[in-house]
Length: 380
Image (tube, rainbow, N blue to C red; front, top):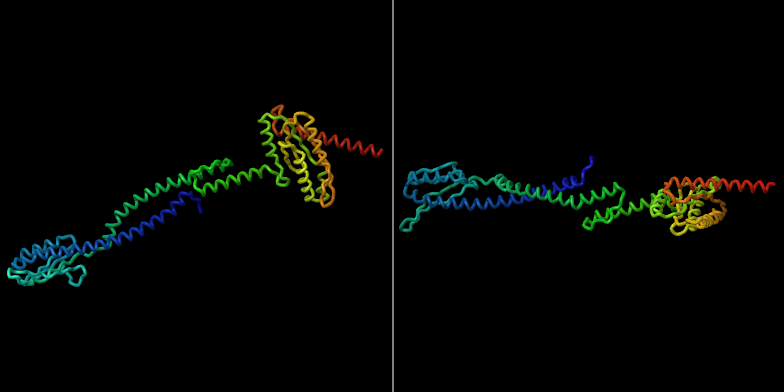
């Protein structure tokens, strides 16, 4: 199914509801209008019947057939009259104009014609019958729906315009800002106070998840230390602050035999223990990271004097040469530590790490030479 914009789905769901509301309103209004039309038509029919009955009495009593016929013809010109009939007793005939009224039809009204003479005597002149046009519900619908349709379309235009404006202001613009922040991988903080609670909650969740992901992206999952990304960020920060210090780079001698002899679970435990010992040796303000494998690094700002960094290296060496117990078996490892100074020039992080790496391998080579010399001395 093709993707739809949020406001499109909003309108697609809103329009049927508005149409249903219009249909219900139109049906109710049409029914009421039709009922009112019937009532009004009934009153008008009775009034028409009474009026023409009074007009016809005198000509019929005077046997003025010509006048009576003229009145009846005039009656058929009324918009709602289909036909009229009245007896002419003088001419002994039935005067009919238009359609012959059907006495049994509900749209035919009749009334007796009485003449009262000077003596008060009442004379029956016959019965006036008028056939009216039926009241059509379709006429009522057409007359009532056209104004309603005009009003509905006008209201619909206003409602849609207001809905789109409100949607854009309360949902569209906040979502656009949130999407832009997501594309930049930045937190949206502070959250505007006028945002809807639901969007604010989504934004807070996004900010929390972003912070969590950032922490995860800068942490080594095995040891909980920072990783290379954190190292570069912290190194850039201390360099921008104009601080001087040292980077220590170390790896673990005889670590590979630990994995080969005791398994990777033992190797992981050794790495976790080394991480904790390095944190214990580091000073407040130092940054300890694991670069990968058995390679660690420490950013030690404010170690301008060699004595400061030497003391840190000594603590690390003493801590890591202590045996690590794995299932009651002591595991012995030793570190090789290289160092390089930062803050005196504008070297890149990769350059500083390369310098520390070179110094570490010089220290490792020197340690191997001393070890070989000691072995040779013992054999002699």
